[in-house]
Length: 404
Image (cartoon, rainbow, N blue to C red; front, side):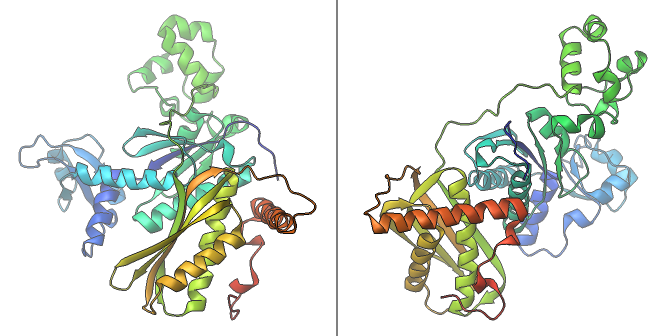
C-alpha cells in the first residue's frame, strides 16, 4: 500500500445538477420518463423568449443545445425538446442532502456552489488506495440514496481535484496528483484550465500557447507583462501550484450513519442481521478512521409501507469496536422489529468523542480483551484498505451461513 503524507482533497460535482435533481424528483413522484434519457432542458419562461437553458440532457447536447443559450434558439435545434421550469427550493434540498452524506466522512466540507463541494479527507487515511475506496462509497451512496450521479476528482491540492472532476463524465472518479500533471493535464487545450476565460484564450494563442503544457513551460515574466497578476496565477495553475485550504464551517462531526434500501423486502431475522453486519462494519470503520468513538447507537427500520421506526441506546463507555456495536445493534433490532417486511435498514453512531482509551492494566482482564478486539479491528481495516473491501469477510456473509 503506497503511503501518502500530503493533503487528500476531493472535489465532488453533480452531473447536470438541475436536470438530474428535477429528473430524480419526478421519478420519485411516479413519472415514468427520466428527463436524463430524453432531449430535455431546465429553463425559464419559454413564452417570453427571454428564458435561457440552465442545464441540458446528453441528448439535448447532441442536438447542439448549449448551456446559456435562449430557449427560443434551443427549440429550433430540437423541435421535441422538453422544457422544465427550475425549482430552486428542490435544488437546495438536494444539495443539502448531498452535504449530509459528506458529513458522514469528514467535517471539512466546503460548499463551492450549489452543486459542487470540496472535501478534505487527509485525516481519513494515508493512502491513495483508501481515498479511491472512500470516493467510490460516497459516489455509490449518492446514486442509491439520492438518485443522481456525481463526478469526483481526487488530488493533493484543490485546483487539481477540481480539474480532475471535469474529466470524463458522468458517474466517474479521476485522480490528478502533482506527479500526474504532465500526463493527464498538460495535453489539454489551455481554455480548459480553471480560471482561463474565453476572452483570454485568443490572447494566449497569439503567444503560441495552445495547451496547458505550453502555458506551464512558458516564460512567466512574459506572461506577467501581458496579463499582470493573472499571468502569474495562470502559470501557477498550469503547474499545479495552489496553496488554498478547504474552507469549512468549524463544527464538530455530529455522527456517522449508513443505510441501505433493499432490492427485495427482507422477511427473516438472519437476512436482516447480515445487512446490519455490513452497515456496522462500514460505520465502525469510518469511526476508527477519524479516531472517534461513539456513546449512542441507533437502528432504523423502514417497512413496506414506507413507515420508519427507530430505537437507540446510549452507553457509558464510548466504543469504536465493530463487535460491541454489532451486539447492541442486534439487540435494538430485536426490540424494534415486529416481523413486518423490511424495505430499509440503517445504523447511526452519534454523540462522538475522541478515542482516548485508558491505559490497559495487565491485571484487568476485560480491558485487555477490549484491546485485543480493537487490535483485530485495526488489522482488518488495514487489510481492506490494502486489498479491497471484500478481501476480509465475516463467514456469515457466505451463502447459507447463519448470523449468530
